[in-house]
Length: 362
Image (cartoon, rainbow, N blue to C red; front, side, top):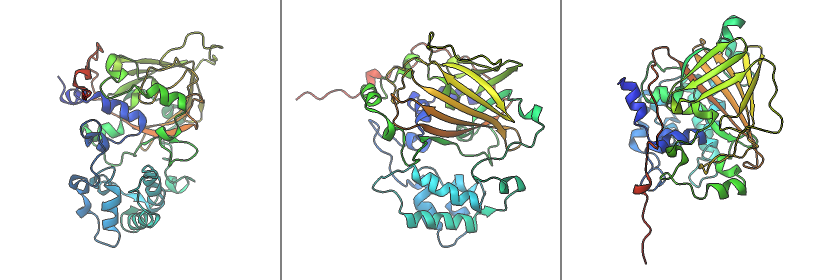
């Protein structure tokens, strides 16, 4: 078996689902028995700090940034000063209102250090971006930019699994409130979704019983392939062997949701070099950690960025029954024609329930 495929096959189901809820792999890997919180600032997370210039603020970088990932990730990439000043508050906002969240002074110190000592000049395309974290379109002719075909792997897992050169890959931004990025998914879940999720544990996760993860399956640590025909884009995932059809022939969603499915019904249009996909007609999910209703509405803006070998999918989700606020995230994927799909049959492949903690008798 291909070595990279073997690594993917051995990943725990809890890690797969956490991708949809913007949990970082560092947090997943550090979970203790029963899902205990990770140990903050483990020594391994500070690896790479010595590569950064020794100046005021470096220790702040080590203390703050290692809460979610190791410093090597910062040392391997240089952003522009504008990008660092925008990125640092965005990343620290993900810690929400936790008691140990960094102070505003800490955040300013980290942003100042990185913009002053670990930045690079902007390219003309970057300078033209109003939002410094918005990747410029790939410099390709329109017809080529609209060709999304190929095999793609989420940049996060492409890097973590060491699947190929990953330097310079953009960092995905997991799903958060579109209204207030400090609010993570649990903060915007309605009582309906909280009640539905009450029975969920890592031991009975419906994903381990072959329930479809839905269209965001592309965030799993498995590749997906995009195929083009003039009137349809087809997305084929190794994970669950899901097939998603996105129609470009001008059709509308069937009224009344007559045939709800886990993948929904997808129609799309082109806006310049960006494919705008609208998906509705979902069926209610099972009791996932973050469940959704049949009112789930997904909008994706898909385009090629960087040199064209990076795909950006900008995601907005609305579901008034499940979420009090819309959700928003941006995900990146690396194109790699050497990735081989493996057979992936789901037949109740993980049975964690025998390992669930037993109730203590009085």
